[in-house]
Image (cartoon, rainbow, N blue to C red; front, top):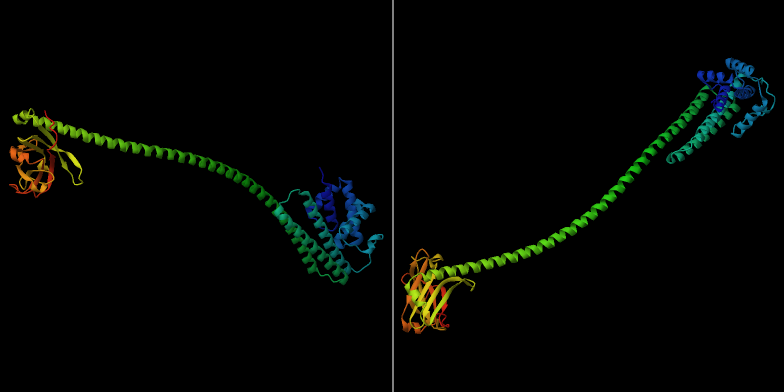
Length: 421
């Protein structure tokens, strides 16, 4: 589909000589096929020839174009009105019948160039406005900058028009000033294109950022969900750990109690086993013990050691006491303690409670069975036995001592009820 508006713009630029060689060829090829665009081009050419006479080869080109396309005064009038609405001022002679003004050549050149600059500015702004209106979406962050730049360009163009008018009035516009103005106009166009290119890149970057924002929001939502799940699992694990610790504490207490009970039962079993073994050994010791088992008023007394805390330890011996007749004292493991038989003697004493200071010696223990580490003391003085009701053992120097001086090891009370037969 042919873009008539595009070729109409080329026709306007062609009327002021602002087309390249390729654009001129394209325009001429289109004008041969399109009558409406040819009419528009004729109007542009008529305006330029009426107000901006050309010289040299440009005059020949305008004459050739005017001969080729003819003239349409109605379209010319509409174009002038539209240009005036855009802010371009024309000379009063424009309303009169177009005739070739008879003015010097050096005056026409500056006026033509000033109007060329003004028309170029107007066309450049029109092209920019057209392209800007075709863009429906512009990045918000660059919109205000673009508007400001467009306003600046409009002010700059007005300044250029004012300068051109002053140059026309002064009839002294110089060629270098014209080139400078043309360069400024070209720079303005390049700046406009650069701004438009920045807008396009900003739009693309905005799309990328929006996609990244969507991805980031999705990741944040996922992390939040995972965090909540981890918090829930952490709470459950903490509760389970508390339950395990409570159960473990109860189990440890139960285990400690059971172990204490096991030790207690083991000690009782060991004590009972020891008593049984010793009683068996004593019964097998000899005829004397077997004869005593049938005697009247017999006391069989288990002898207990006393530890450093005052508590009774396991049994270490047994006393067979027949009232007013005899006393046989068996002891075990005496030299397994801190004393040996070589350096000390184990001596038995009898006394009547509470006069312990009047204790009388009953004799020194001797080894009865080295294999069993059994010691024995025998005493059969009825007078002494009648005066005592308790016995104990001390560690004394070798050969004994007239009075107890060493540490007490074993103790037995004799004045109880007979328990055999």
